[in-house]
Length: 248
Image (cartoon, rainbow, N blue to C red; front, top):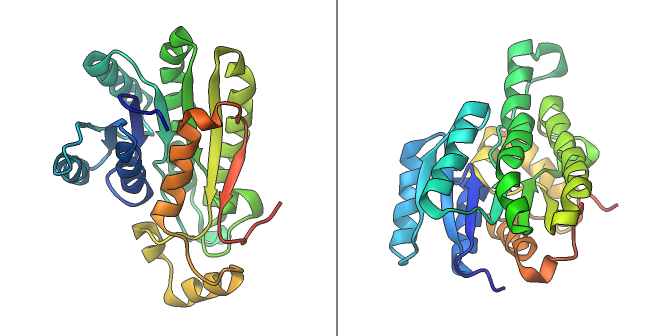
């Protein structure tokens, strides 16, 4: 994929999809920046990569805090002088009923899941524009395409917002040879899914034509492709990785 030596920030890389994405990009020679709010999980992933002789750094960041996002980008530029790939993966989920969602819960969901995508992208763009190349890959969800089954409406709304941001950014930066795409996983076997009940997980499997949940590797493989030169004419796209749950 010709990604050797590229620098990639992966937010929420301490576990789940982010961890799988960091490992998959490393397989292609990328130097991952493991960005996570939890220093323990971030350092664990760094250790896993080091055991494979993969160089990486970790950065503690609350992606809902713009000042911390700016500091994260500054840290990467200080260390490597460039940013080639940004994977906006960090996110939280909820299952709160519509009647019970509070303003605080709503605002936190939007800050972590949606605001972070805008400001992380905003902060890396000057460096990508200067080089006239770059990849921004946003992790949305099938819930953002069709509404959620097991998750709450705030989560679905935030993930739909990511799709709108993806297309808008893609139009604005295409002239700089920067591609901006979204990946929309369906129900995937991660720690986040453990928040759902067994009955909900069984129901979701029945809804999926392939009758199984996705794996983090399914998603990470698509991210690696979108980061590669093979995807240099793909921008503003939403790639569904959901076993047929949503087709459209």
